[in-house]
Length: 264
Ligand code: ATP
Ligand code: MG
Image (cartoon, rainbow, N blue to C red; front, side):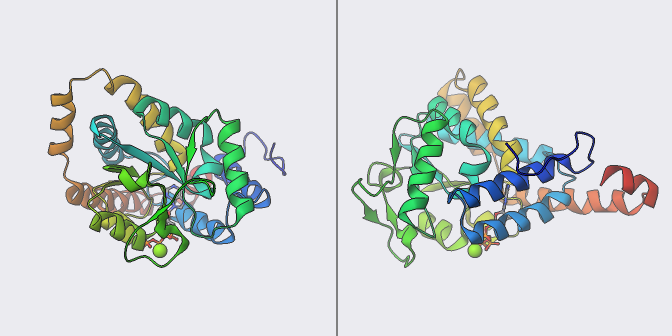
């Protein structure tokens, strides 16, 4: 239920509906206030790829899913924004890749944890890690609340999916030897640059795609999956994502104002 009615034919309907979901998440204590700003930054970058998943992101998704399927202990880190936008897909991806969900919040409040936990349960999750009643261990070199991790989750994970992550924490996870996969619309963020696999796309499109890829790829041989990972070059993929943005803007700059009114 959205709070405001957005007409079906509104040219910005999908984007506005997404924004409404995040606002509702904020009202329900799922999304932090800073999460609203993070979402706005994401919206701006989404314009730069025409609000569509580029082929570069598909290549990164393929490598990411291969890494999750071959991992010994894959984990999916959950924050407020991702939970408000794609709870069902998080649960589905967790099931398909045997990667537990771990709640990990920068702005911790007990009621936020509770709200996220119940949203995940509502979406079908049964076992959620990182809650206050669980044991916790710490990530060295981090001072925020997010240094606390679940020893059965991120603590022992070899591969961690951290959608919409903070740069400092990504760096700390890398220093701990984790293989880090992120989804971030900004290819220049510190998170994007530090990660092993960076999916430059909106989580609203890429999480469903990851589920789709996981359904198909879990039938592949381990050797084939390992080959997909080793052939993926994240640095080149980030460069290609930036190039995609430049080329997209170049094409937009040639459009007439009339065409822009219809498409934007
Ligand atoms: P860093 O600390 O890594 O340099 P940052 O400080 O720019 O990053 P934050 O504000 O901590 O980033 O996190 C928000 C990031 O998430 C932004 O890069 C933003 O583009 C991205 N983002 C926000 N919403 C989405 C979304 N729906 N899908 C994908 N990425 C998103
Ligand atoms: Mg940051």
